[in-house]
Length: 471
Image 1 (cartoon, rainbow, N blue to C red):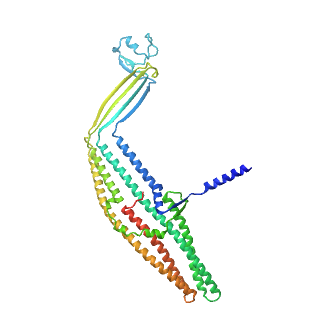
Image 2: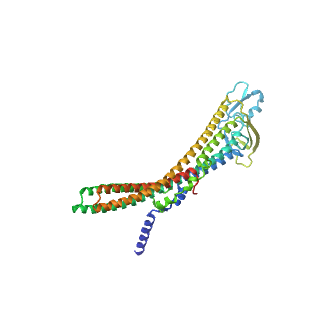
Image 3: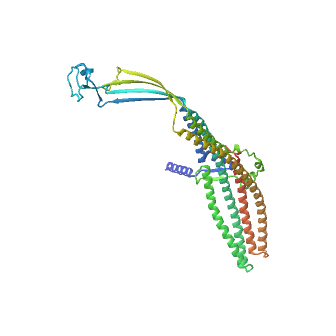
């Protein structure tokens, strides 16, 4: 009985242990590192690079020797009959060759099919045959193959650049999601403090009103403010849950995983106050969007080369070797089976001569697309310059707004404290107190928004510049 209790207790402990959800703890940098490895978009971008590498080798291999082998077995259920002139045979010798119709003594064993006068029905070959052959093919010259090799390299480069862009976007998404969680946590903390203060104020004001020293309107004003804070608090709790879920999805973990963030929003904001990035080098050619646009232009140029290569001849070589065996009965596995060998070498030259203008039209269309890609590259270059300038402006504004909202918050806190003191001393109205409280709550929300904006706009600028990528 004792052993059964121990076993049961151990089993319950094991179930409890495995039933507990794993808790993830992240700083912002740890979250970025984790997402770059586990985010689903980042994983697929890595797979795209692997697929591009395989495609590059696939394209390369088409120009290397290709060997194919095959075995063909034939069994004539009814052999085909051919007609030969009767004059080609003597009366008996020729008939003895018609072994389907005569035995070795020259006696007819089955009716001879009707044949036109002057002809004799004859079957050629044996009922069973096997042929085994191997063929080696080798490209000697093919312009499209050379273009294909260049295209495979460009495609691999496109996949690598797409991976870089994906990682930059994942990094920015992680920062935004991380800050949203911190924002909701800070907002909840502030709302809970405001709620506690309001409840205390309402309780004290109610007692003063009950003693006949305050008007009922003062109690009602505080009740209205309290009701608004409670509603905002409930909504923020829901938004907090959604913020954590969005953060988990961005990192590539389960939606409802337990997650703990270790960074502080205020400290993180101060760390992201960097005037130096506003002077960062604006080398557009280093940005990932420019590189991707350039890849597109190069690919269009290669398509033009491909169309031009269709005007060139192609030359291929092949070598074939095989063995064949024949029998009237299936006996190819016997040791005395006779096999007949054969081999062949050949060249295949194809020269394009006339296509009714089709190749010329294809080449002209490819040239137009290439010229469009060149124009698009110039346009993207200009847009990127504007995008970086706009991102710098937004980031500078965010830092200025942060400093401004920080000062406003301090002023709003002082004003609210003064009005609260005046109200309970009987020299201030409930309307003035509510107005000061509302102003404080607005300043608190704007301060949190300003901190979040500093971090997010810096991440956006870093993405545009492609200057920071944590691997």
